[in-house]
Image (cartoon, rainbow, N blue to C red; front, side, top):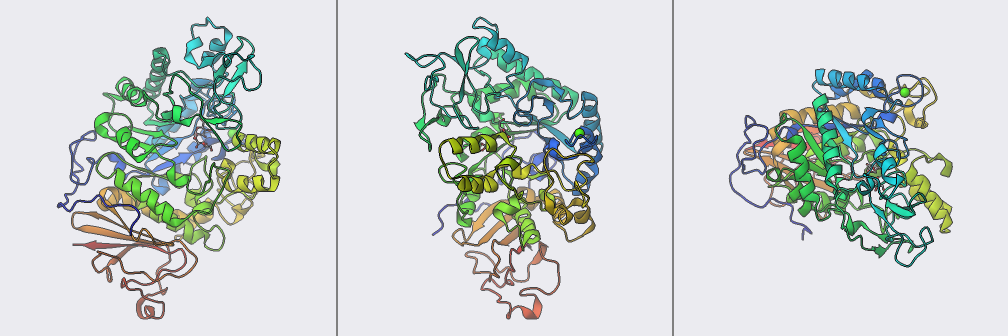
Length: 613
Ligand code: TEU
Ligand code: CA
């Protein structure tokens, strides 16, 4: 029996969404939310320090991005999400901001930014900024002022608390709560100046802003309006579901190490989160041009909450990044790695498809700057790297939702072959390694988990060509280029019509031109099959069948319950070059044509078929 119900579950006649509707129209349509422009859009994420260096200092920058805009135009993406380029001490690679209204010199200037905006817009590409307002840098003037004295006018802009009752301030265990920070250790930092602690859910250089204070909210909204006035096209909102905390700040249940507690139930999707996002919408977005994009990054968000966040009637955000499918290979925590089961992946993504079928909208992603490379994690980055990279692209881009491509994913870039502990640079990995060693964990086990799960996997420079630093820089790159760049690089990908790059390009084009891909209903089939990912999309008389073999073995296509005969349907796209293959033409029987009447799937093969009527 299917473990989950993944069908929208009605059999009423379908209507084609009317693309002439105004962008902001929320009038109900049978297939769910009214058609919005981003239903047929694809977003590309740039992590600027690793994208392209223009001045030889080894760090990617804005002029480097400008120089590579034609790569993005050739790929066909509609939107770029730019990871933070604001002034920052770079404790967490820019997710610690010291001036929201300036560009870090490492990346360039506001003039460079304006030029990037202009050049991107000239190519029909929108630019969405990363908005990091759960916390600032401890070097932001707001925090410098706040920490200066208990009477500071900005004292209440952050979360200051005295030591736990009856305990010596600064003493072991005297932190106001037992919460653990995302980057290891206590989430509270003792500050000598005033003898109090401040809250930091991430590093100690990332103090959390107090959104309870209306002045904080107004300052953030003013800054957002300033960027929109400058011409940016929206925001990807960093950990935005952490901005409302339970103000009584209760202790959390003890976590794996037993040293700290899990505070997340008290700060994820807290009591005022919807109120804050609605206020932000009113104060920042109302009355502006239609084609803006807002996406909230929301660790731990449930389908039910996501329906509320993304229901257009509620005016909160267009879509959220949920984390369920990137947690399926974790045990008790992210460094407790376990093998991914395809059945779990299908159950999870299928539940999100069903849950947001009639209200709201999904974002779709396999990886980003915080996650291992997709092909290494969900595919086979050895023998079937090219096939499995294309398969993953096919499966994701055929789901209903807005797909996000992380830089290098379109080239089939892989995880990094880390030598030892010293090869990890990310604050999360470095802190975890140190704390694990202090707790006496086995260093080989810890290194194995880091190799698999470290955020550094995503942060090696984009591989543009086969030259010594992969065309990323003429200097010494801040992070070594992956040695496989002689084989995997943009120059080769663009030159080869059968490459991963061109496969992505075709999928993007398909979303742009095919209403079924953008808006069709999603229906999961064979949820219990261990290696076959199969689903349909349908809109009006048209249907697509997506088949993907998540294994290195040939696979006969089984009976597809409740499906019409797909034999003879037109192939829309596949990840094997056309020509004789498993089950093609006369070889069908020999290659094991399955009960479904369709040719068997070769290792990591994915195919999409179309039926009209
Ligand atoms: O990430 C928030 C987040 O919860 C993660 O994906 C985080 O990297 C993960 O929990 C670590 O295991 C966002 C940013 O994407 C990330 O780069 C920042 O470090 C973090 O917020 C703090 O701003
Ligand atoms: Ca540079």
